[in-house]
Image (cartoon, rainbow, N blue to C red; front, top):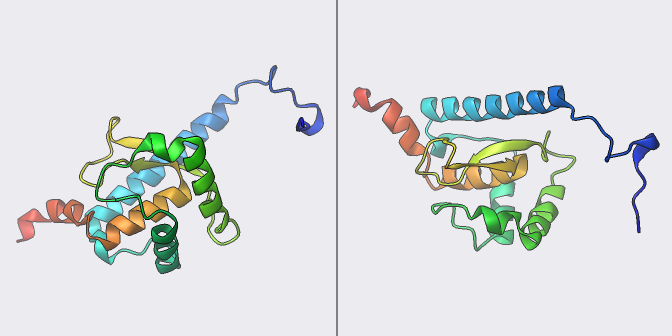
Length: 153
């Protein structure tokens, strides 16, 4: 079954909307920088990312018991056909409850690392929330704060 294109839109002849892509990239980088700045100022274990962190964490742990947030996130598993379907089902729960729930953002593949080209993957906002809330609750991001405030000891 073919899906109709909106109002004569032809994806074969569509222009590349460079300005939109640039705006997306700017917003994703701003989100990444803001989150890192917050981790430098507040221990992750004391941080709340949403009003419903507890619910998101419980849902994530129930639906993804195989994901160990202390280890490197397997991007191939996350983005496989099965992985995409699991995550889509998870994310849709928050469609009307979390702003920009499906907006693209940057996620560190390993909580022991900073954002670098090698350690950063593209993810949806709800994937970011689920994984980072779990990491924060486990104290896995506290090292960022401790490193930033090492001279205060």
